[in-house]
Amino acid sequence: QVQLVESGGGLVQAGGSLRLSCAASGSTLVINAIGWYRQAPGKQRELVATMRSGGSTNYADSVKGRFTISRDGAQNTVFLQMNSLKPEETAVYYCNAQGTYSTYRGYSRAFDNWGQGTQVTVSS
Image (tube, rainbow, N blue to C red):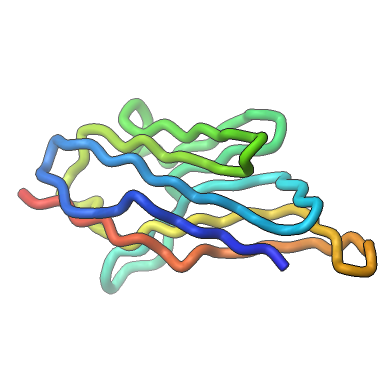
């Protein structure tokens, strides 16, 4: 099984910064892609930033230049540094990871998992 545990959300004033973390755990984990999405009240979940195993990144246009995604591959942890936050970016931020893991019998299985989400609130 694969678990994703997020942390780092909270309340920040407009223009402030937060750093989110997402730690992935599982047996013989191989992560092909990992990233962050967010969902504001009454809106659809949207991509914020993703990173593939080779290191390539993809950002939503609205966060380019302000948000940075990075990864500690050895720890299977991904970070999202968010600077110059705006009130409209108040949302629940979710971590998503895709890849493979090994079952207790040694079989490789694909996964596409979500974390439980962490609330980010930006006050004006």
